[in-house]
Image 1: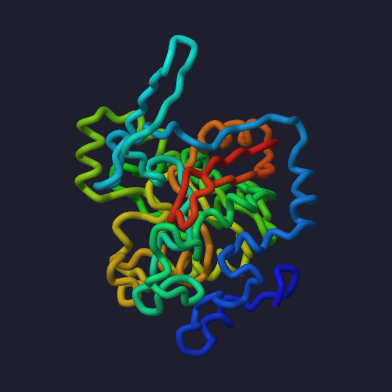
Image 2 (image 1 turned 30 degrees about the vertical axis):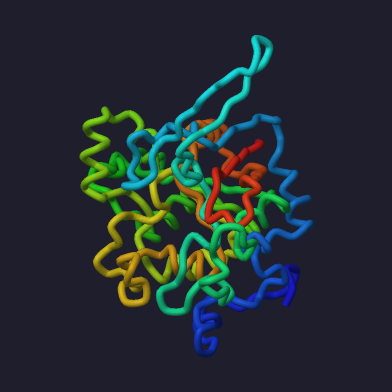
Length: 326
């Protein structure tokens, strides 16, 4: 099996034996890279065709944008500028949570309750200073290729049924499929999938008290947990899946989540299935509003995407440092 070869379907992954069932363990030539391996050199070259006007979009929010945010532990970093003499300035950050704002989840961000870390990496190897499954893999060999945006926010607004962010609405696979059909959007192996929900802009417009109430409610808009979505993400051979919301998937998990027994510590969320079993990185809190509005105005839904995490050995996640070029 190589990054240029034919991969099993998700149904075939489920039929693998023992701990390998439902995983992509051992299928990629670079074991710590995961699904970004779906991007071949030919796919990168083909993605150049998505650059037509040279319009560039930064997809990261400021490091301190979500203060308060939805996380119960991550706070905003404190920025200090100092000088050693009148002609000098330098600075540093304190309390910098690498997943406190726009981020990419690394493969060691989640351990599957039933089978462990991706590719069977032992627990004792997932600690500070060890390289296994760290984000440095994607920093030293950045993720670059074609990205496609599914405008769920625009689709629902066009129907006169805005997404209910206050309720933390689960967004089902049927909705994603319908929005893609309305955009005549087709995906390719190696694509980065971006789901525009409008949640980040909605959340950032709230006053601090409303943000705190939402934080305490533990409700956030996102993709509804389903095996159908996981199968589609794998069978589509997405390199990365990202969204402009807190956790990519909805919080809390839907009552019918198929992962309530296998992902007990995550209360049925899909993170373990996607990260620890499939090796598929997740993007969260991405700044997709300006890109979505521009795409809507042009009728084009693809762009060249680059993702360059911080080069931190053994990092569990990182600011995405994502850029879209149209």
